[in-house]
Length: 37
Image (cartoon, rainbow, N blue to C red; front, top):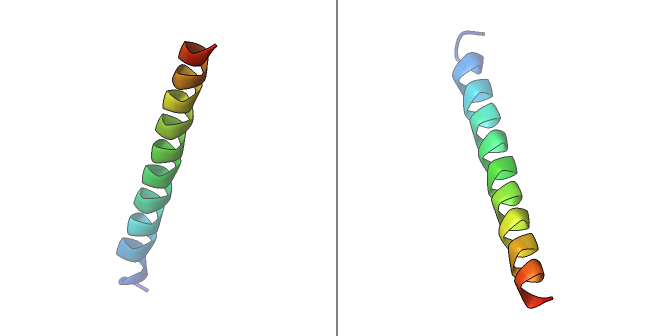
């Protein structure tokens, strides 16, 4: 089971990075929408 820990850490890092990217994209999209209207 020792080699499972780094994989779990990498998965958590990838998931958090994906969530961060989605949040940034949504935030920029909201800013564009506010600029349009």
